Image (cartoon, rainbow, N blue to C red):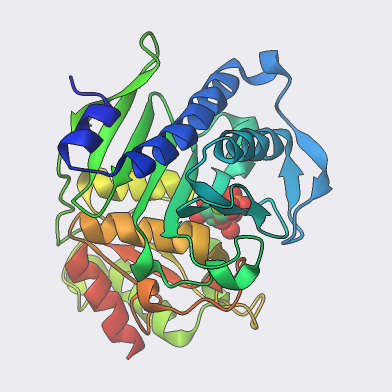
Length: 320
Ligand code: AHM
Ligand code: MG
């Protein structure tokens, strides 16, 4: 089986990008090992502080963030980084070619209940001063690579450098990610949706109508019986879609009307949209492609509808 490095070299990936991805993966392997130890490593529970978005940080949010920061700072190709757990950008190396944006541990409310979590990352070209927010405010269509590591029953890496999507499985003996699925394609049509139904009354009417029609099954206008899943971990939901199709939605809702949604554009929406589109799916904020949104700040939120192409088009039609 080919290692991730061998696959990247075969795709003609520049060495600078291979080294940058390697730095991310070194951190992810350590995160996987800590997660595996759970309570034995003393990493469950809260860190006793809040992040910039006012969310309580879990101990593992902090540990994962520190690991990624330290490996990326040591990689000479990384100019700077931005993280869900950092208020401001973190400068790395003046001569670096890349900016790395990440959610160190997505779905971290799941850690204490032993349910799947993940690390999401996005790589942009370095432009200007990496200590300045403006240098990071590039739309998702500028991404050079994106991926996630999902820590489930096995630890998987799902990666794209813009030449399709491959899935690698962590071989815990060799401590390497080995290619286990090549050139993933998301089926265009699906009967499975994922949305937090408890927010139903807060959605805008278009989203309410779409979900109500899905629930009507074969007798409704969509003429299909849908199944529903909600893991509360975007990485797990996207991984299910990468594996067997589906639609995932975290729309705008009136609980926080001034925010476009709950999820963050630059290190959740964009990298996941890049992967989903590279696998033949679609990703929209209901008005435009997520990757065409011009970010105004690093921690900006976005409304997310992504997955099987035909189903995303149906969801968008309800909004227009
Ligand atoms: P996090 O980055 O703080 O973990 O939050 C993002 C997570 C997503 O993984 C998931 O889709 C969503 O929040 C779940 O939200 P909710 O608890 O509202 O269902
Ligand atoms: Mg997250």
